[in-house]
Length: 116
Image (cartoon, rainbow, N blue to C red; front, side):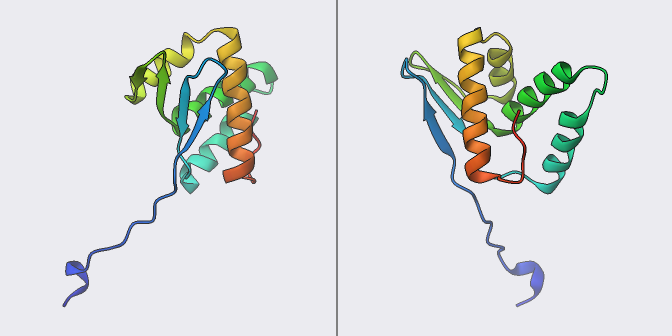
């Protein structure tokens, strides 16, 4: 049998669920491609004039790349565009919780990534 006819086994990393105090569940992807890691490094080191801007962009970048599902008050959001819109509309408390979750997730799954 030729090489083209062989099925390639795809490795997949498990997703992780994080639950906030209100019972909402955010699901984050357990894998990040090398190209995404490189782009993230550029984003976080980005704007030399405004560290705050680079930090905010880094949080949004990680959320956009890692979030696969967010269940809020029984409503599930799983489309990437909708997840990003909901993130941008998040309250101060929700954003603080998301940053904490991203730091925890990166420390566990991507120790080489400096989470904002």
